[in-house]
Image 1 (tube, helix red, strand yellow):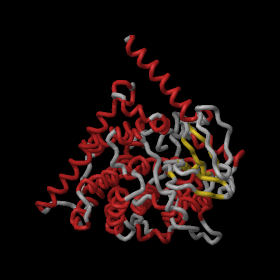
Image 2 (cartoon, one colour; image 1 turned 180 degrees about the vertical axis):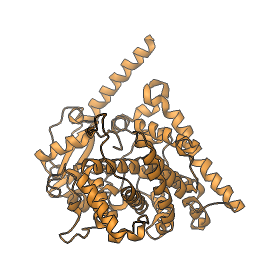
Image 3 (cartoon, helix red, strand yellow; image 1 turned 180 degrees about the horizontal axis):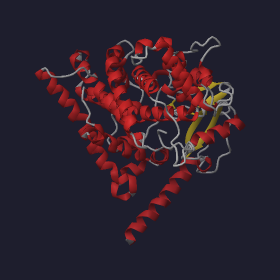
Image 4 (cartoon, one colour; image 1 turned 30 degrees about the vertical axis):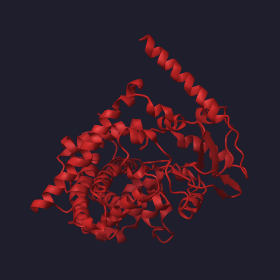
Length: 479
């Protein structure tokens, strides 16, 4: 016990010493950095940041310092972008130097180095995205339309049977659909072993990949060399995470490979790129792409559909208008299909507003610069991390931003203003979500099926009075 206290005390002293040496170095830039809050010695702005809801801090800073802000956390330069136009200028138009990712050491330690989202910009990332494009591009996604509809109909039945917790049927829809598209696997509800292991891995990853832990390991890289037993809580799960990663990378992939050998494989992402494996992609790359195609969409799609149901309940006029549009276009004895989508612009506007109102990843995934740059007279240091601030709450673009209003996305004559897949929720530049066509089609099909059959309303108490609902959004990497 005494040795543990000595170790803890020594570690704290070393951390403070390294911080003092690292953060006290003078930095000279040819131009001023973007404006930002005053920094404390050693810690920078770490104590000023709401670590659970950093977008609230960025929104407050934006009102003081403007649309592009500089802060520093434990010696790491952070550039906060609070404007969609600036995000497009830097992350899209200058994507050649704004497409890297900050290094998150806990990602590799936990066995998650295959994670496409966090790969550094380079050949491995390009190979991942090439495979994704082959099997999930807009044209290829047309072949999955029947699968979307079948799973959306199952979602409607599951919601009808739900007794209160809507999270489970929504998650079952997103997980089973992505599993079917990725591996051709018919999931057996929430008890499916693959789904259960995936959920366990996602739960662990939320802890290990949290920004505060990543910042600590980045600022003090010697921590990676300490044995796992030095860490308490989440870090004890690193071994289990590595074990789960290996199981999930290999088992479902090998199952599809065996099915292809005996001629029983269903159409799927894995079957498609295995049949086209002459493009030079090795199996390890294919396994990583397949697993990321699956785990990358579960939480985000579940979050979006959950927010959709909440919005329909809280804004019954929006729900009524969307349903009326469906009833006008679709015959009453049929379910809406993707073929009806061009005639249902208001429903598309509803989903775009869902993604704006409460985007599943409110800050996006951070970018990093590979070279120094200059923007608006400000110097942008090489290696800076970029986080998107409260783009969804930019009052210059979205007046009364806290209000749910789908008409923001429609012209005066009721047409959509822009393409769904260009929504900022899907990311920017060369890191834009490669599965965005699949995501938008699956969200649209589910929302259309729900509105065509169900009416979402408040629960009622014993007197028949509606039970008021106060929206509460969880925190973390995905809301």
